[in-house]
Each structure stands twice: as C-alpha cells, then as structure tokens.
Amino acid sequence: MSTLPKVAFACVHNSCRSQIAEALGKHLAADVFESYSAGTELKPSINADAVRLMKERYHIDMEKTQYSKLLSALPPVDVVITMGCGVSCPQVPCKHREDWGLEDPTGKDDEAFLAVIRAIEERILMLRASFLGESTTDY
Image (tube, rainbow, N blue to C red; front, side):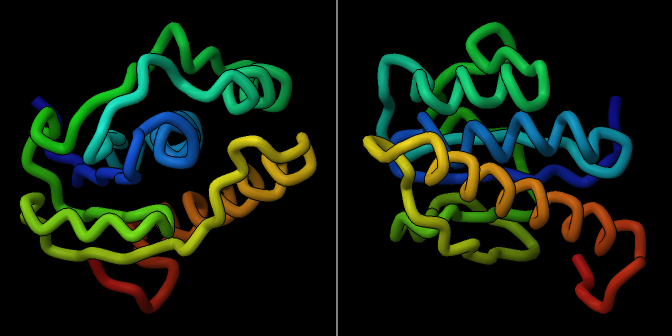
C-alpha cells in the first residue's frame, strides 16, 4: 500500500483539464504523489482534442488509462486542486486546497489546448518540487 500523498484534480465534467492534470501527474510525479481526477458531473468521454494532443506530446493515451469519475469516487486525498472552473468541492476533505485558474480550452484551437497543457505541466512540476521540499509551499 502506498504512503505517498494523494492529489485530486477536480473540475466540473472531469473531461479535459483535470484529466490532463491526472495524466501529467502520473507521468511526471508518480514517485512523489498519487494523482487522481474527478468532477461534479460526468461526460461520456474525455475531450478528443486533449486525448489527441496528450498522445502527440507525451505518448499518453488517456482513453486507455483514465475515465470520467465523480468526486464521490475519489479515495481520501491530501490535496485538492481545482482547475479554475468554479468547483468548490466542499464534500472532498483535504489538508490543502488550491485553484489553478485555467481557462477551459474546449472548442478552441490546438494552440489554446497546448497552452493549457504547458501550464498544467509547469504546475505539476512545481507541485512535485514542493512535495520534495524544493520550495516554500508546504503540503
């Protein structure tokens, strides 16, 4: 059983930004924290543009490794990060909560998606560093 901290990335539909964050968390920081994603509502599938661009950029097939989940499906978590979609997640207890304030790229061009993906990657790496004690943020 893992003793790593658990981080939940939450959004309304759990179909785009939170799924990207879960995938990048698993890809870039699995040695430091466990990554999960969930939403207050479900979509039948992960955003096709997000899936395509994550395959192209990181060779991660989110359709094979992830699916849309409700907040109630999360295990107990240490950190909840909302993506900027106005989700307050009061029913998800945690030690630390923050909002990354990322605009939803759904319906926009690839550059908008790539900008969000790059922003999530940067924040995942900063979160990883904070867990490793490489910054002043304490979780």
